[in-house]
Structure formats: structure tokens, C-alpha cells
Image (cartoon, rainbow, N blue to C red):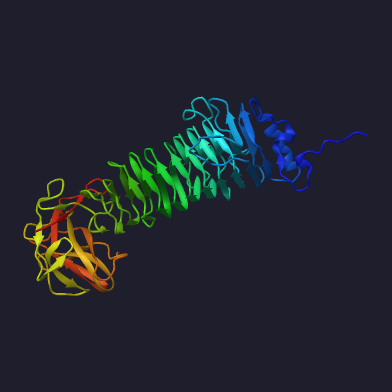
Length: 504
């Protein structure tokens, strides 16, 4: 009696096993044909999961997956995403030097929109020397026009690539939206230039959730036109330049509880073309990153991180925060006419003269009440609401059309949730301009002092010494003696404003 060999893939409902189609997993034989055959058979059988048992699989050319019809595709291996041992036990995939990518997702006609869904788990993808001597990329999407959703990568390991995971819409003839609902969890990226890279069109990556990963000694996140939302949280982001760089049209997201160590350049850069975009940045741990910068451009920012020896550039509409710069604060407003900024009392160095640069036409205005004891000393103050009679008139300031006033003080919330802004009038009490009216003392407790700064650009002359006042709506607050200085005809995005805890 003869026996028939039963393959794993013959079990009803089981995933297709790449070994059943000639893969060796010996690390030297080209297993590309076996992968291609297995994927063809997988779809012919109405299945979507390709199982890759433990072994080292060598690909001499890319595995190209064609999604002319919307389909699902899942890669499942047996690896762990460990880092410290750099061991590749379980399922490991390597490839030929200079190969564009190990896996390429494409269509017969890239100009015709179709979507797909993808998942990958428990696989070690291994190149060498930043893609020199191995494949440039592990997984590359070339499809646009209809979202590939979801796009899940879990418990995988990427080492030695130029770019680990890429979505590139540059060949789609202007189609938007590449991979969507992108969930990258519990994976490890070591010695790559980029862990995740999106380029070529709006929404190359859309709705990103990058959480619980290790990105060590190279593995930045770069997206030139993100769409929708993002969440970059609870990761180790260490030993790389420009760790997070995201441009967006209209988007919003969170970057929180990440561990930054030994980074250079930008720790985080967020830029938007639509100022209704927003970023919530909180509780990131930063160490050994002296000289780096957190950069926010053309969006609203809510921040709650101690940026010790880290510069913060806010080319932003507003910054509502209790962050700490722990250095001389510099912001580059992108809209000089309405800027409001909030930081905690450790935000910038306490000065007895002036911060960097030369602050001309400026000085302190002593206020009528107090003095009162504050965390930075005994300072005069006034209580403010929507209306009051106390005006400040900085004698050293006169305003021409196009000039701006920068005001710095500390404020404490006394009742409800006050929205504080700065209003500027001419010498005859005619209204000229005010800063943003929509920013409150976020996260400040009743009785707590925070550092506030406001920027107002005027379109008319003051006709002498201007009249200036702080205004609070929706609640009441105490504001300290205020330092004012003038910036003559500032240019949006390029003229810096200097913030400093000055003392009279």
C-alpha cells in the first residue's frame, strides 16, 4: 500500500505553508520562486495567510504581490522581536544586495485605484549596513487611490535597512492615500536610516499608530504628507538624527511617553499647511539630547514635557502648555499678529538683564497691586477680568504700522478657567490689535503661576506711547508686572521672539 504525503497546507482552513512550495529556509537557496508560487496558490484556494516556519529565507529578487483586486494578505512567522541578543531565531528573511525591497505591493496599472489589507507578525527582516550589502527596504507599498486598511505590523524585527517600511505614491500619477489605519506595535528597528517612511503624495501614510516599539541607533519616522491622525507613544527612540519628522495638510495627533536618548537634530518636527492642525505633546522623557530641537510649525500645540537643554521652535499659532525649555526660550511665530504661548515657571532661564539678542524699546511696567510673593520672587501684580481700568503704557515703546509688541509675565488662575490675551491700543485709547483670544491656562490649578507670553502685530501707528492691557474672559486671573519690547516689522516664520523670566 502506498502512502500519500499530506502537506500542512492541505489541512482545511490552515494557512498556506511556504515550505510546501519548495522553500528551503537554508539561508542560501533562492526562495523567491517558492514564495511566489505559494502566494498564487493561496489566492487560488481563497485564503489570505502565508505561514513561514522557522528558518532563514533568502530572496534573490523581490516578492511582488499584485493587488489588482482588493485582497487581504497576511505574513505569519515564528520570530520574536528581541533586541539585546540580536539573535534571529525563528523566521528570518534576508535578500540580495541592492534589492529595492523584499516585498513589494503593487498593481498592473498604478493609476487605477484599488486597496488591500495587510498584516505581518513574528518575522525578522534582516539587511546589512543601511541597505548596502542587502535589500534597501523590507516592505514597500506602491498603491494609492484607495486606502490599504488596515496595515498591521506586530512583533517584527527590522535591522540594517535604508528604510524598513515604505509607502511611496510617486508613481501613481497624483493619487492620494496609500496605507491607512497603520498600526505598528511591539516591533524593533535597529541600525536603519528610517523605520517608517512615507512619500510621494498626500496620505502616503494615513492614521498612524506607532506604539510600543524600539527604534535603536537609526530608525527615524519620516512622512512628508501625512493625512488624518497620528499617535506616536510609548516607544524607545534612541541614537538617531531627526527622530520624528511629519508634515501634514490638516491633521492632528499625539506624541507621548516616548524615551529619547542620545539623539541629534530634531527630536520631533511637526509642520502643517492648515493652521487648524494640532499636536498634543506630553510626558516624553529626554536625556543626553543637548542641542536638539522640538519644532512645531503652523498649528496649535499643547505641550507638557520638560525640554531640558532642548530648543523649542514654535512657528505656531499658539502654544498652550506647561512645558519646560530650561534654556533661553526662542519661538519663531508663523503668525505674529495673534501669538500666545504658555510654559511652566522652569521654562526659561531667569535673567536680570535681557535674553539673547538686543531687546530695544522695551522695559518693565510696574502694576498697581502688591507686591505679591511668587515662585520667582516678590512682584507687583493686578487682577484682571474682561474689563478693568488699569492700563500699561510702556514709555520706551512707540509703534509704526507693521511693528509688533512682545509681552512676558507670569499669571495665576484665581477663578474658573480664564482665557488670557493681550490687547493693544493707540495713545488715544483706540483699539489696534490683540493676541489670540482662545487660549486658556490649560492644566493650571487655581492659585498656580505659569509663564505667559503674547505677541501682537499692529497695522497702524500708536500716535505716541501705546496703551496696553491684559484681558481675561471666562474667569479671573492675577498677572504680574510685565516686560514689553518692540520688534520692528517682524517677518513671519523667520523673525524670532525671545522669551525670558526677567526680573525688575
